[in-house]
Image (cartoon, one colour):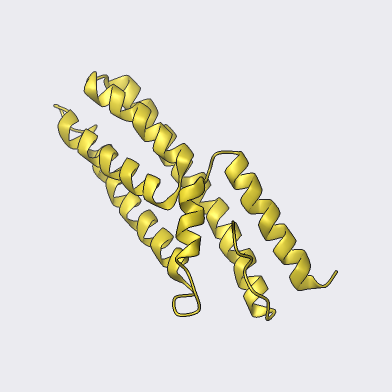
Length: 152
């Protein structure tokens, strides 16, 4: 088995693992299908924007909890936005943590919200490193002259 085939197998196994562990769902597969020769970096660009936006939202949320009076409506709006963008890139675990977070916002439960905020930050960080690993594998495959496998 040549290097390209090994990396492609590794890539498939890794995608399978990410889906099995709930990091990614079918929406990510749909996103991958939008990528072609004309836009080879499409998914990387979308995911990069996602993480830039996520960072802003997480900062806004963290700042909200430093105020004397927490604006739960504003926090909930940020969580709702993060949930939507998580769903759009197929980040299932992150989306689910946001769903839970919104329940605590509704209940105006500061402790619950702070735990969820920490959980969201952690999920974002883990997801980012997992996707970086995936994209590095893709770069290796392409640099070696191979093609990134197509997901069904």
